[in-house]
Each structure stands twice: as structure tokens, then as C-alpha cells.
Length: 404
Ligand SMILES: Cc1cc2nc3c(=O)[nH]c(=O)nc-3n(C[C@H](O)[C@H](O)[C@H](O)COP(=O)(O)OP(=O)(O)OC[C@H]3O[C@@H](n4cnc5c(N)ncnc54)[C@H](O)[C@@H]3O)c2cc1C
Image 1 (cartoon, helix red, strand yellow):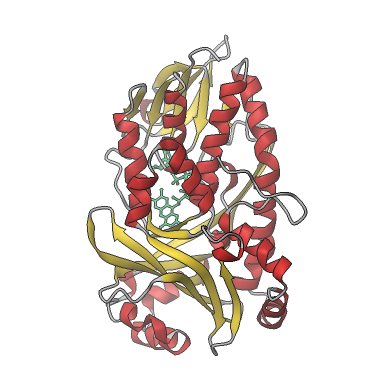
Image 2 (cartoon, rainbow, N blue to C red):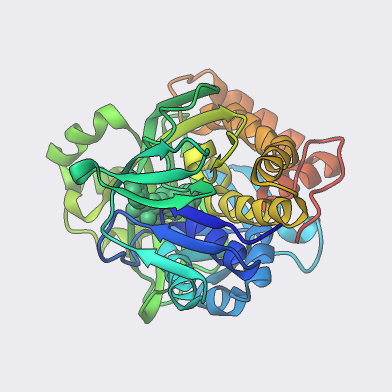
């Protein structure tokens, strides 16, 4: 395809990754970001083999993976210590593993690469409110303040996260809901490097889920860290903040004695941040000249740990569609078609699994604690679940996703 003028809105995972891929194909890319000085903030995220494969394509794997902590399995148990699930990457392939990572490490590597990339212009401190379509079909970015217009773009990549307001103009099918549940989280030094090799979760009913994820070093180095998360309904956050913190800690300790070194470092409710989850469904993910990627297109509950991995795959799929297409609309329709099966499947299983771990459907508890524990003993089922965890499943009867 001939050289195009591309706008990318948002410098999160998918924004920076797609800016890099497209600039390397020779397109002229402007990256618009609301935050004036983007920072390497966030807690622990899981990098899966799928996401690592895309980083390898970008030449960034070695700038990211060594900063994280290798994760070999997902272990889930009840508060009473009964095993619910033990999924090991090696059950799919001996060389597979995940990486527990500080979000800032991934963000920093992608953002620095975008800043250094010839062909990418980064405009920060610019809050994009809207898109304006010109008579010839090209688009300008409309800034919130003063409604000032910027650029004349052949393609706009909307990559501004789950709360994007740029979906409003499109007429195609979409639903954007805030999930009633979210999580309190904190990231603290793992001074004795106790938390290694597994993502450890404890469930107590369907309303209490707690986890410890080895997270590697922070964006500026320093000691190894561990992320702690505690699921909570959004409408219970105020009660938590005003409640008895010592009592809350004692309750967590009773369910998860392994969390003691983390709890010792938490002094009060303000040491934990709360994140809401969103559930975004759209189809297709494009118009003639606009494409929606990452959380803006398909945010989901983080139960399967796929957010940044699906986003990285989106960027790669878009680049592949652009490479082979005659025109921008052709490329975008190819993108939506090629991406559909994998994304639909992950949205389906996420929606299906989440209530077992975070919901008011308490009757699901025995099904999970007994049923799931039994069913994951079947090697075929276990393999399917590991493939889903690794980011490469396309459904139980289809071959695994071929990675870049
Ligand atoms: C600050 C932050 C912290 C996060 N922390 C975690 C975490 O700890 N654990 C986890 O699993 N996931 C976290 N996430 C989400 C995770 O990064 C994403 O699910 C995943 O990487 C997919 O990313 P994305 O690129 O689609 O969106 P995001 O990573 O959300 O990036 C969206 C980008 O768009 C920018 N933006 C938003 N609105 C506008 C606008 N109007 N104009 C211009 N720019 C705009 C945002 O500032 C941001 O840089 C965090 C996201 C953010 C933004």
C-alpha cells in the first residue's frame, strides 16, 4: 500500500505498538496522547506467550521480559487450601511460560521506542474528543479544549482505552458496560524474593478472590516486586475505605496466610488503589477509515490475564492487514474479519468464567470448587485451558492461533 497519513489516539499498549508497526511499513504516523507527560504507572500485568511473540516482532522482547518474573503456572485454591486449578504452561509445550510484569515496564519500552522511531510524531497533552470527517473522507482529530482540529489523516487508529468517547459516532453494534466488580490492588517490594514461578489465587465463595503475582522489577529497577489484588464490588469501595483496616487485613490473612509479607507493608486503605472493569463489545471494529483496537474495542474483565496481550495482537493483525491491502478500507475490513474469531472466543470465555470468581451467584461455588477441580484433571480439558491462558486458543475444536 502507498504511504498513508495515520493518526493513532492513545499511547497505551496498542497505540504505541501499532504506531511502531505502521511507521516501519513506511506510513507517516502521529500519536496523540491526552497525558502531558506519560508515566510508567500501573500494577502487575500478565504477559503471555502471545504478547511476547508480538514484542519479538517489534524487537522489544529483550527490553521487557528480563524485567519481569517468569510464571510457570496458575494455581487457584480455596481458603481452606483445597486445589481448584493448577494450570502449567508446560502442559501445552515445554518452552512456554508467562511473565508477571509491572505495567510501566511494558508501557515504557513501547513509548520510548515510539519516541525514537523515525516516522512517528508524538503529540502529548492533547485530549482527543472527536473526529471530524472532511468531504474527501479524510479525518481530523478534534481536541477537547477549543475544539481545535489537527491533521488530515487517511486512517485513524482509536487506541484510547476502555473509556473511549470516540465510539459514540459509530452506528454499528456496540455495548459498553461497567462491570459491577473490580479489584483493589497494591504493588510492594518482595524483599525476600518469596513470590516466584506461579500466579497464586485464593477463592472464598464467589465474592472473595485474592491473588499474589510476582511482578519483577519496576520501570526504574529496584527490588523485585509482588502485586496483590483483592476483588471487590464497586459499590463496596467506600465502605472499605471507611472501614476497620486491621480487621480487613486479619480477614485476608485468615484466607491467605501467604500474603503476610505483603499485608505487613500496607498501612491503610489508601495504600490500595481500586480499578473498575469494563465490558466492551463492538462489531465490526472498523468503519472505512477508523479502526478500534485494544481496550477501546474489546475491554473485558482481567480474569484470563489477556488485556495487553490481545492489544499487542491487535496491533500486529492491523499491520498485517495494511501490508497486503490495496486501500485503507480494504485493510480495515480484512482486520475485523481476521481478528473476529479469536476476540469473540476470548470475550465469550471471559464472560462465562468471571461469575465463578467474582459475582453474587453464590450457587456457582460448589460447581467451581468441585466441578472445575474434577474437570481440569482431564488432560484434553487442561490443555484447552492452558491454551486459553497462553492467549493462543481459538476455541476447543480449532487449531491454536498461529503466533507472529
Ligand atoms: C494508567 C493505566 C494503568 C493501568 N494499570 C493496569 C494494571 O495495573 N494492570 C492491568 O492489567 N492493566 C492496567 N491497565 C490497562 C492495560 O494497560 C490495558 O488493558 C492494556 O494494556 C490494553 O491497553 P490499551 O492500549 O488498549 O489501553 P490503555 O493502556 O488504557 O491506554 C489508553 C491510552 O489512551 C490515552 N487516552 C485516553 N483518552 C484519551 C483521549 N481522549 N485523547 C488522547 N489520549 C487518550 C490514555 O492516557 C492511555 O495512554 C492500565 C491502563 C492505564 C492507562
